[in-house]
Image 1 (cartoon, helix red, strand yellow):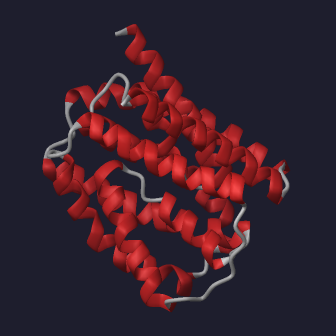
Image 2 (tube, rainbow, N blue to C red):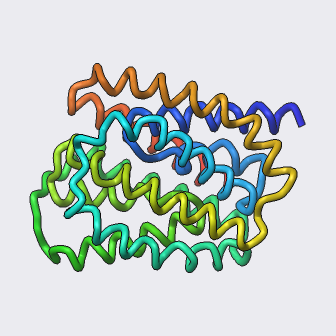
Length: 242
């Protein structure tokens, strides 16, 4: 029990830090800790609750960066994808879930960190944005990880740090709030989850504020390097233990 509390609190803090730093990534990072001690049906809604808290903590600070026109296709697709992901959550094996999360993290962060691809593409237009939103909504309903695909897509589009955060942070708030409703309807909110939320909420908020302070001081290059290194480590840990 002590080990469970430690892993849950540590995952919440590190995930909150990454979220405060980048505007996404809480679930991906926290899962690297949580999936060692709790199953997906607890980890997914817990990550979603913490992610919504962390997003709401920093969202007012980036209101001026929001581009509603860019945001609409992502949200339209994402809202359709959430219930699909939630429906699969009760059917997926915990070890498979860990392996998939780890693979996503390693592939994304490894590619962006070591190959440093430079894109500036408008391929697919708003329709492609909507497809990315659909897939991201699915991942949000599956594990509260709606932010990683928009982050990859933002790099493909060649958006700046400010443009990227303005789009996918607002997207995450919308999709993860929808995912919370979906989890509640599916019956995932239990007494056990309530205790885990009480443990993780303070750690999440402390981590978010620490991450935001670092975000304000980092250059664009340092910002990307720090985040990708953290996500690569988290993914490698999940793969090694799945």
